[in-house]
Amino acid sequence: MVSSRRMRAFKRWMKWQSVEYSDALDLIIQKEDEQVWVKALSDLHEGDVIATIPKHSCLTVKSSGAWQLIEDFCLEGYMALSVALMYEKSLGQNSPWFGYLHLLPDGNSDVPLLWSLDEIDDLLLGTELHKTVKEDKALVYEDWKSCIVPFVESAPIELNPDDFGVEQYLAAKSLISSRSFQIDDHYGFGMVPLADLFNHKTDAEDVHFTSVSESESDDDTSENMEEEHVDDDGSDLVETESNVASPTSEILEISSEILEMIMVRDVKAGSEVFNTYGSMGNAALLHRYGFTEPDNPYDIINIDLDLILQWSSHLFSSRHTRTRLSFWKSLHNSESQTQQIDYFEISYNGEPELELLKLLYIILLPEKEYNELYLQVPKKYGKSGIVLSEVSEMNKEVLLTGNVRDGLVSLADMRERCYGLKSMEDDVEALKTCNGVMEKKLYHSLVLRISERRILEKLRKYAGDCIRKKIHKR
Ligand SMILES: C[S@@+](CC[C@H](N)C(=O)[O-])C[C@H]1O[C@@H](n2cnc3c(N)ncnc32)[C@H](O)[C@@H]1O
Image (cartoon, rainbow, N blue to C red; front, side, top):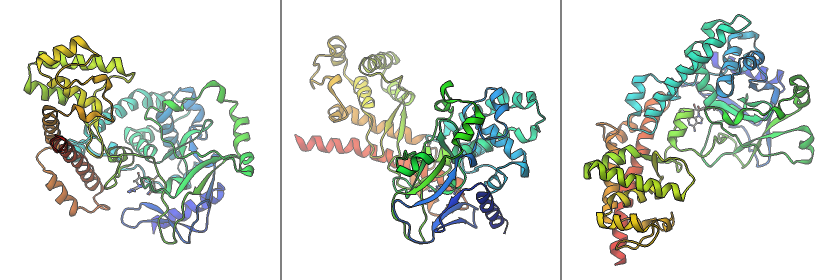
């Protein structure tokens, strides 16, 4: 089979690159979708070093043959690594990473960046990702046109434009977003062979990825370098002058450095060995990696400020909405250093963030109480005697007046309508008959829609529960 031939070639490549891994691991290619996963062949124990990966075997901007070209053209972050990846792929068998790249898919087609616009509109409508992914696609195209095309045209060596087309750029971006790791200050981030074959499990990883140099490995003072992902602009990766030494001497000096994979819990023979890509909700998982997890505790849903303004303008004059909004903004700005708020988070349990409650409370205050509040800040005001600046996450329920509760329910209903005509029950039914391996886009978009809509359900319940609690207290 082609896939097992590719795996054998990858194993030979790892040997050549001195990438070592435990005999107790099996690298398996799943027949149905060619996904790779790592299986424990015998019991593994916490503390076992199951793989060592020399840093020079990682495909990074610095290690790539295109390094000088990239440097001369001043490309940085994701764009630079994408060019390095496209360049090495363009070399085919002449690339030192051929045996590794040959195992990888051309792009990660599960990542929404690679979906068609129709698929995005159809599958992601209403979700946290719909607008974001459309914007991503437009930005990627812009980046390609304004940076990659001129790079290829002005390169001092002949590059085939077909190897650096927009499709290739999108594919490279999807691989980087779903498989890259932060390595160290010298190499920055890049593709780490073998380490990138481990699948993710939220809060239940079996293995840690650690950077260790030979001098450190003897006395066991290695620094834990849990997989770190970088922002899309790669901004935290831009090197300072001080850590960019003469490339050859530095590479020689650090070529002894290795990355280690260490077990952080026991795993029984026959089980999959998981890594973690971080604590992320389903929107972030799908956006970056192309999959979701059922019952993900890091799920959230956002209520956009625009939606709140729409809701307010159904109830009040636009002048009322504007005045109350700017009053809330002035309070918010005086109390916190955080930047402008465009949306408000509802947590996995359906709890709205404090600032949303404050804004609704202010919008809904009767005119007389609002005027008192406006004139007397930060003194006590109104019947409730609430001092807004004293309300915290701990006691935010004091803001849940009947009107605020109604407001939360209306906002949940308005947010729900963003998902279009299909009800939550339709989505749940569709998920039951969907094949998670063969219909990944549909499957994971349904999980995302359902997880978000469950949070809206919990938000309504949160508003209702508070009614009950208040009645009970009286
Ligand atoms: C770093 S790779 C992991 C190895 C990958 N399975 C492979 O075939 O090479 C990350 C990709 O694996 C898949 N993946 C990882 N964890 C997963 C999970 N828990 N459920 C579904 N797919 C997962 C996703 O396609 C993701 O983009």
